[in-house]
Image (tube, rainbow, N blue to C red; front, side, top):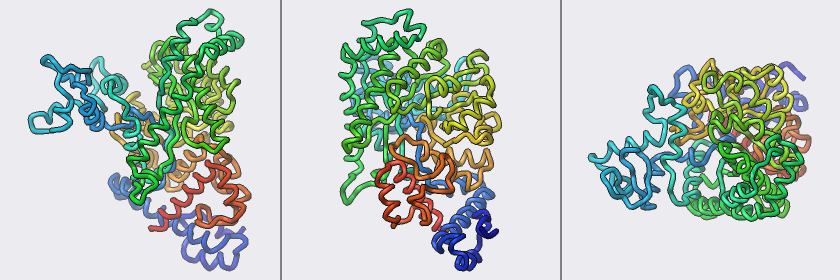
Amino acid sequence: MSRACRLPARLIVAAAFATCALQAVACGQMASSSTQLDEARAAHAYEAAVREGPPAVRAFLTDFPKGADLHVHLSGAVYAETFIRDAGEDGLCLDTVALSFAKPPCTGSRLIPAKDLSGNISTANQALYDKLIDSFSMRSFVPSPGWSGHDQFFATFARFGGMKNHTGEWVDEVATRAAAQNEQYLELMETPPFSHAAQIAYQIGWSPELERAEPAAFAHFRQQLLDRGVRDEVSADREDVRRAEEERRRLEGCGSAQAAPACQVEIRYIYQVLRGHAPQQVFAQTLLGFETVEAEIDAAKTGESGGFVGINFVMPEDGFIAMRDYTLQMKMLGYLHSIYPKVHITLHAGELTMGLVPPAGLRFHIRQAVKIAHAERIGHGVDVTYEDNADGLLREMAEGHVMVEICLTSNDVILGVSGAQHPFPIYRAAHVPVALSTDDEGVSRIDLTHEYERAALDYHLSYEDLKQLARTGMEHDFLPGDSLWAEPDEFGVPVAACRRQALGGDHPSTGCETFLNSSEKAAAQWELERRFRVFEAKF
């Protein structure tokens, strides 16, 4: 191949047209050269924005194709203003002292109807409205003795509880915000009903054999749960997110001439398991989650799509039960993975730092999530350098293509870890795949563009780096099907069926189109490449 064809995109100039006209075999068709020139111009515009400062970078990145946000808690992604409005519609009360919602009747000196605030903001009640937003988020928060960012962050969720089911409306809010930033795919973490499964688990009880995580004991306990009807909640759990999707698409006018841009945002769901409870409940809910996701996989074989695509454990990783039972819970996941190997697993692991827990608690969480629980993705992974043989772990994650969901703002406000203290550059240097996520954008008062801006400026990322992050997210989503790319996490060469043509083009070859129709993942990756082409053509 000629030297001209190996040049970085930013150095390709108009002379490339003449070069490629003479060397079509080596350099590809003129359309490919035009695309490279567009990419070089976009990279130049980005570099100019970086020189101008954060506002210019934000403006550039708003329309930059970001692909996926794979680490999003739905309840934490909704902004406080929405919760206050919904509380008024639901007839809830506002506790003006605790700055939280309360059930009616709204009697006494400290309780007022939420509708009095949500429906009529005036000078007289603006101060209370502002205090509620601060109570439900990290806005205006300043740490004080005995109350940290960690405490404030996790306390918000209890304060805005008690509302009716507004899931479809909330999904619409998140999808609408994603569409405005040129995101195309979300995996939203959601906890569907599981009370029946928990009730059965407590009736059976937890035995010493289970405490020792003996596979035979796990198998017996699983069978007991199934025999007593754990699967009874599977259809309800699947229906829970389907109703939300139907409502979201109704609100967005999908399928009509007035369809909102949010209709173009594809959404799947991650089944949340609450790790901070008794082991029998955690096992039962995890089993229900595996059964639910497997039911979705089976339904997909008949043409259905959507719904749950994976499992995750949530609640603070530093909580007493989460720390005490961490290894036991990883063994639960490892056992259930052996029964349901097609169910995807992504785990909060390493959302810890020195001082939050004793040093011994920092030494094994990510490794056990990967090695014992078979996690394909790790959420946060902040304490990786505290792990035993951290270099070996990083090497294993890189070789195994275990992706890390990087949540920069969340890690800053909860753990106080940012900038040079964050392992983001360490993961990248070790060739561990990484992608940016928001975690709880409503609580943190951010969006995904903010995370891209923060990463770009704090870590001096190039335009090529930003594209790598977006492509990595789409490479590691849990959509079914083969990847567009010939090798994992290598974004230079597509699969054979789609080579020698403009990626993301409107008219793929017959063979490529057949391949794309066979894989939701590859089709989504092709769409990302199309969006890159459109974005870069502007420059």
